[in-house]
Image (cartoon, rainbow, N blue to C red):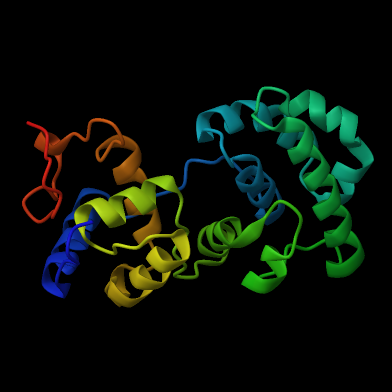
Length: 214
């Protein structure tokens, strides 16, 4: 694990990421807070591309928890069958939809605690929804963010919570709103797990990773 980068280097990293993409967007398709919540919950151990393919026709007819309950679990299973762990995810989507209707008036809550308490949601999904829908400067640490934060030395940590908390401490305030999207996209397209594209990386000269590729 590399030594943590200094604040000046981290600020410069985000300045460059901002220059390359001033308004980064999440790649999960959605039409409102509820469909975003469902899409993120379905994306665990799955690709955004695969989730979008399954949810595009689903969200055309189901965009509220009430409509999801009316659709029913077996019909939902048929829509999401191509997504990994689809049966368990379908059960969780039905459970969280019922809780939203019965305890939240059919609305997606805007607090991390309430979101994380929903079946199949958890801390990372809650952070994504808070960031993407309500614009909160949360740090959703998925495998890409965890890898980039550790590999670069930006926020080294042994688990996702440690990385999340360190990112909250070191990311400059003016970049916090979009930080997790920049890091996700950087990990997805440049700082790849098996063979990072160091020669094409805008952050390479600042990065603490010792095994850079040519």
